[in-house]
Length: 481
Ligand code: ZN
Ligand code: MG
Image (cartoon, rainbow, N blue to C red; front, side):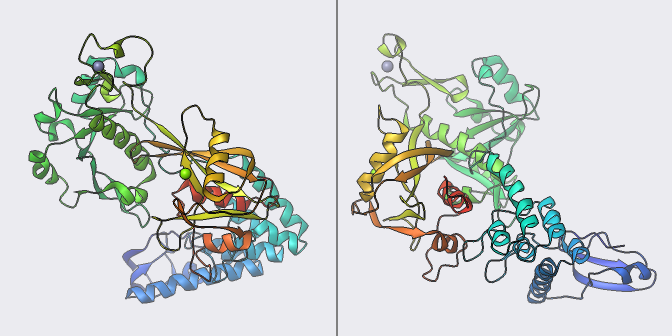
């Protein structure tokens, strides 16, 4: 019997009838209980102490995993699969799936697909497993991989900051009593902000470094529920109004220290970039809360007559306190929160072999990204895209395809991601906006995505929609985006 292996690194003492093994580092949680079974195990539990040794151990597992994929050793691969990252890459950016594709091991490919490996991953030369299977004429392997690709192509892309799981229940916003009832419910979760800075605690993961600390109504001081308090209804955990509600509260300086006592390691943090390293559902909730809180803070007075605004509908509407104000008559958009659409586009060259990436002056050194700009009133998405690209780079655009969108809560932008098909390729940079803009080949962009470009240039991280646009283009072996 082959032991089941898990990701977790645990400090355990395993006491067995035939042996006592003392270890600090164990990858197997459901271990064998008799010596005879242990003997059949394909993975040895090793005595390891310091972190360097542990890393060496992980490295060995990963290398062995790649070897098994290359040789088609299905049994060992199966035994290792819980202990390794299925998308682990070799120095040249090869994954297990690519090695299996290189050698036409269809059963290994099936197993890796079943284990949710990334079938769109690329090696340092910009090849996917499918490209590799085609190149080496492994027809069955290619069939298997391309069948899977179709499913991936139809999957909806959900960008970071868009994974807010709350049911917004906008009908409840107008019902004052229902909101008050929800506020006083002990299962209700309050997230707190001070001057729009979210109060965050350790998220517990290597990528999810932060999450919201949640408070109950009895933990919050009465001042949080005053008439003047800023409190925003974010939604319920499910469609059922009896499920837990979430609210965002701006707290006053005088209550900061008493609230911090509940989470001694938590703190109010400047939201960018720390919210890019959040539990993704919490990042979605942050996007909603932060955008509304910023709007309430910046629009305290009626834009029509300058009188005080009054907050209603759980923070989602502000009305002018002057009854005579013309904002009370007719159709206006001044009393609702703003969402400012902007465009971000991957420009593909006329021959479809290159894409245009640029560097804004404020970008981190060596980072290249998609061009972007704000929509103007009365402009459609396609024209914004054409105008922005031509203004910034001189490149003329023909067809524009919508790709996906991303809320960008600093304070309330909605980024609309597009693929723009260039009609010309001569670049004339607008030096006011960009420091540089260039055409990059697929191979080069693959290296930038993998952070393996010889010049050290790279693209934004996976949490940015720019990354997803670039990755989609690279992943489309048919080049028909
Ligand atoms: Zn007014
Ligand atoms: Mg611009």
